[in-house]
Length: 336
Image 1 (cartoon, one colour):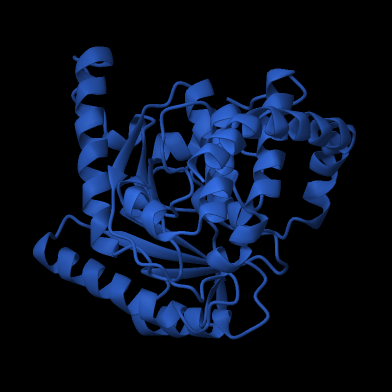
Image 2 (cartoon, rainbow, N blue to C red):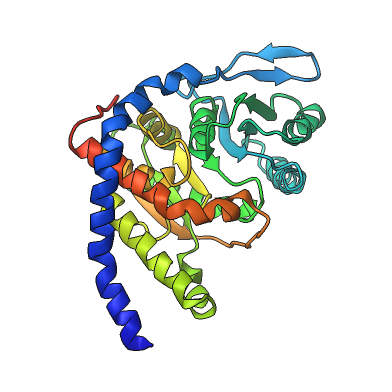
């Protein structure tokens, strides 16, 4: 079995390269057309106040920050999990705000065209906590997780912006780990590049903190079937080809961005659905944005939409590779 495993790994890389070449040949022909027409179906973001029945002006990430932290939660058909995740999130935020009067926050739920009661649950929390604390963006149609997060990031008010999944797989208080590491990196960056600028803020420095489950991989390898480990290795190879080394776990849905980083990344990202995270890593490297990876607690929820759609992951990573390859060929330009 070990010999077969070694042979399979040996054949995996050239096989993936051949497949990637084929996918690029098929996809590159249509990619510019797809990207050029995507704006036609893009829903204009709307923030509604269910208490006053009025629409609230939609902020821009290019405006000055009004809150210390924004939490962006993409949600697609999550009516059964969203309530529990929001209860835990709001409890943490309220307790922290009570202890630290300077701590201000908002929770932004982006309903990605759900067909169930996701928006109803979300608006219940707006009614309970006010539209200043909890906001809902309705995309109108299913655009994909990457697009939902992009919309949330571009219309957030925080100095720090955290994306987290609606299933509550990662405990919200783990955000303090990411927040601390961003602060440490920002302090070094300020000392090096802006030693005389006493008015500089963390939010002005582009930094990204990636939550990571890589520390759980060894245990997972021991319990998973050999064919799943084989596919996982293939997945990691494709990610390595697309984004390069540096971040071991690109797919964890728990990431924090400074406001400056969000401005750069989410005006340039192209992938709208799964594995947009791979493109984020690539963009960080291309735009020289510092990245840190921090271990977080993670609980598997087998009812999660992310787990259910994970079977399509390899094909989507191929698409990520194509997008990255197209960038290197200067098919796309940067807005920086």
